[in-house]
Length: 459
Image (cartoon, rainbow, N blue to C red; front, side, top):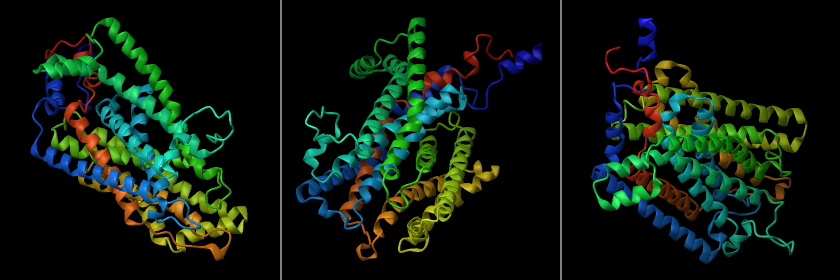
C-alpha cells in the first residue's frame, strides 16, 4: 500500500525541478514582471520597422494597382495566395494542441498550449491581410463580408474565396475566445501580483472579477470544454475550405479530392514546426526548461514526423492518380512540377517536407535541441515552397502552349511577405512581455500538489 501511495504522488516527468505552486508562478511571471531586456527592445524596433515596410508596400499597391506584383498571364495568382495559405497553416497547431489534445486529456499540452494559441492568433491576423489586398480593387474589399445580397450582385457566395473569409474569420473568433478564456485565471494572478496601479487595473479589467471561487472554476471549466468542442471541427474544416480555392477548379494539378486531408495534414505539420522553432528559443531565453521539457519537444517532433509522412504520402498519391487517370493534362502537370522550369522549388519542397522529418525516427535525433531546431526551420521553408509549387506550377503552363509563361515575384511581393513576418513577431514579442507564455493554472493541475492526498515531502 505504501508503494502505491508513493506512485500516486510521484512527480511527473513533464515538469522537472521539484517545483511548488509558488515557484512555478514566480518562474512564469518573471518575464512579465521584470523590466524587458535590451534585446527585447532591439528586436521590437527591428520588427516594428518591418510593419512600416508592410504598410508602405500595401499603400504602394493601393496607389498603383496589382501591376506592381509579378502577376501575369496565365499566372493570375502569386505570392498573395501562397502567403495566405502559408499563414493560415501556421495557425493550425495552436488549436489542435489546445482543443483536440485537451479533449483527449493529454497532460503534456499544458506547458505549450498558451504559446501555440498565441501563435495561432497572430498567424491568422497575418493571413487575413492577404485576401483583402489581392482582390485588385482593394476599396471593394467589403464585398468579402456577409452583406445581404438582395441585388444578387455582391458578395458572390458561390466563390471559394468568400468561403475562406467565413472559415478563417470563424476560426479566428473561436481561437481568440478559447485563448482568452484560458488566460482569465492567469490574468487574475498577474493582477494580484501587480505592484503598480495601472497594471492592477488593466489586468483586473481583463480578469473579469476572477477570485478563484468554486463557482468560478466550474463556469471556467464548462466554458473551456464547450469552446474546445467547437474549435475541434474547425481544425479540420478551415484548411479543407482553404483547399477548395484550388480543388473546385477544373485546372490540372488542382482538381483533386485529396486536397482537403492533404492540406490539413500540411497545416498541422507547418504549425507544429513553427511552434517548435519559437518555443526552443523562448524556453532557453526565459529559463523555462523545467516546464517545457525535452518530453514536450519530443512529442511535438512525433507529430511532425507523422504529419510529414502523411504529406509525403500525399505527394506520391498525386503522381499515382495523375498516371492512373490516363488524363494527359493531369500527367503533364505533375511531370512539369518535378522536371519543368520550377523543378528547383519542387525538390526543395520534397527535401524539406519529406526527407528532413524522417530523422525523427531516431530517438537520439528526436531529443536533440540543435537537430530539431534545424529541421523545424527546414519544414517551414518546405511548406512555404509547397504552397508556391501548388499555386504557380499549375498555372504557368495551362492547356495552350501558346499562353505559357514564367512567374517571377517583384520586390513588392517579397517585401510584403517579409513585412508580414514583422507583424507576426511584433505581436509575439508583445505577448511574451505582457502575458504569461505558460498556462500557470493548467500546469499546476498536473503537479503533485494538485493531488488532494499529497502531503509535501513525507512521501
